[in-house]
Length: 92
Image 1: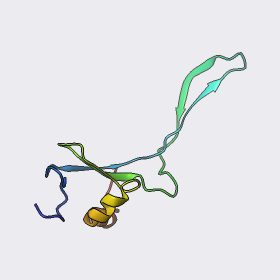
Image 2: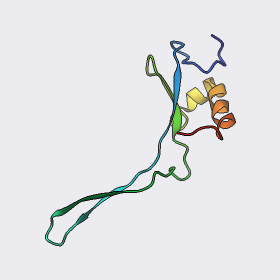
Image 3: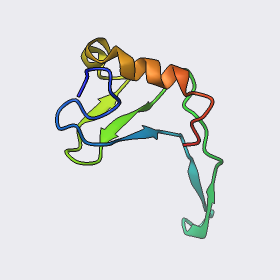
């Protein structure tokens, strides 16, 4: 397994790509203090100014998060390059 392969660097397992979105759920409160049964859910939106995305191993649960894992970004730059080169293909 080469260090540039898109596999888990710990166990060689397959990786999944993930991306987090912001969704807001709202529920009305009536004047008498009771809560409405209806819950409104907003359309999923990317968190502005942040790319909350990464990889997770399907075998050992190793995680690469491009926000909090700066040391991993430096150690595995090919994963960050993968983000950039596949941005138009990602449907998550």
